[in-house]
Amino acid sequence: MATSDAPSANVAPSTMDDADMQMQPPKDAAALGWCTKDEQQAALDETKEIARLVSKLPPDASAADAVTERIAKLFNSPCYMDGTLARSLDTTELKAARAWAVAKWWDSGGQDFLQDALQHANAVHFAPSIPRMIAPELLPASDPRRAILCPSFGAACDPVAQGAALDVGRELVRIGLLQARARRESSADDGRGSPEACARSVRKEPPAERLARYAACVERLVPELPALPESRYRSPQGWLVLRGRRGHYSFCDEVRAYDLETGTAYIASRCGGLVLDTGGAVNQGATRGTGAMKTQVGTLSVDALRRLALALWLKDELDKDARPYAVFPVPASVPMPDPDASSTFGFGMGSGWGHSGQTSIQFEIHDGKSTLVSGTFVWPDAFSVGDQMADDLVVSAETTFREGCPRAALPAGLSPAKTLGGVSRIDASPDTLRKNADDLSAAFGELRKTKVCKK
Image (cartoon, rainbow, N blue to C red; front, side):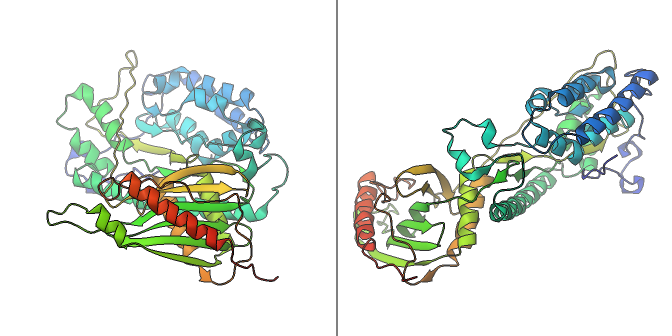
């Protein structure tokens, strides 16, 4: 059986405050009366047969119906108690998954989830997430994502892009771990930061409600790490354009155009500072009067730019809460459900944060004639994993900027927007932002006259 990366929920008795805080010793599904020994053995045999079939799946976007139908049928068999303790497996989503994603799911904890839930049935099991997958052969011919995707079958067509995807994936994991640590610290503050704390928190609940409340509590302990969709990627081509305001009390309204092939950079900035009246309100007229134009030309790291462009292209495609397989034994103080009256239960929560100094940066990837993809991200810090990834990769790329003559001419079809957005109306009116956009457009007109370096 594959080794699981599930969070350890084993608890030494010496760590418990009371005897009833200990965890129940493992029992299989038949011992709990959820199914017969023969049914349990048949289910275990079926997991082995499914493992054999999964090992033969091709690593591409071909259908996997024969395998996923068997997994769904297995999961709906009596030993799994209608998902009461073996939880969060969406069989509809699984049956829609393609071969590559199914194999990844099985090897990253799907097999463990199905087997462990039979052999250690008196524990709360959370199925691993089913990986998202995108492939050009599954998309309409007009879908812009096809520009950054290689076919799922055959050898990788762009090893450089695969390397960039690995780098972006590591950045996502880094951000996800930081956010997970913050969630754990928040859970610890409210007394629910470990399985033991969850067990302690339900002791005073009515016995019939303890299992549902315990499951809801430990569900918060399952790591959620963002991930790129499974795919074979192609390096983005064209120009990356960033437009918007950076900064709050001191700020710059900017347009930055970066060539993804040469690293050439054209930058126009109108920088100023907020002027506050006696009562603390922003004097928008005086604030605009502080503005001064500045232009720069040079180069950035091509590798850093391609990572950023790939991340921006995919930031709304992320699997934002991918989970590993996780298992938590049930405390001794929590009664097991009645096999004849099973029920399912769930728990959901949402949160977010923001601050007045945040703005919205518009991005666009342009082939010199038309826009291939566009969107926005919050600057400078963001609750959204995709936006935070964009922020960090922008900083990483722009720290490589070096002034000098450009290696590529600024395309005529690429220009600043007629207005800028994403700024609080307290700080700047639409009319002010429109005037600033006009100034930036004029500056870009001058930048087009810059001579390109001789090769």
